[in-house]
Length: 165
Image 1 (cartoon, rainbow, N blue to C red):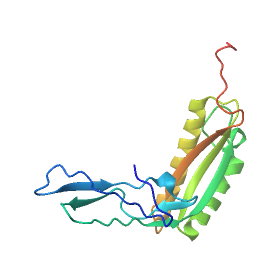
Image 2 (spheres, rainbow, N blue to C red):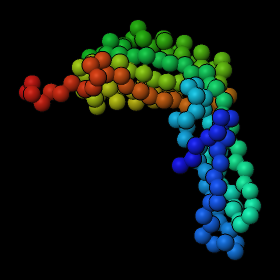
Image 3 (cartoon, rainbow, N blue to C red):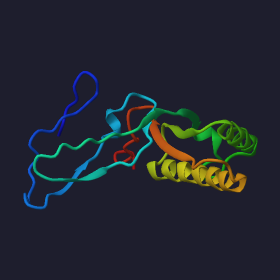
């Protein structure tokens, strides 16, 4: 584990090199969670360099703020107990695709769950993700779309139905 100085630089002193005659590979991985909100890594991660005795190594990582587009969903977007989107919501997918095409973006699919089965929630997110990926591929746009998913439980977690049955 390494910590950074006030400028965000990290320092390792005297890294252990198993073979001091020919050196060895030294791998540094940047923890993406340590980046400020909205930033994503734009360079290779992890980075590897050959370390030998007495040699200083310098690793540079790139990070940039990305445009994050968020699609919030809940049970009402879908037909009851299915992964099928209701007809009135389908045009919103096309609006989303056109918004994503305007600039490099990261898409965050967010689901607000309450009493749904957790597997149904995950299936719904996967279904929407698949629809968007297909339409994005069909558009043949200019960048690789990254899609993140997250679930928020209105009551803090899935309902425990063990005592109800």
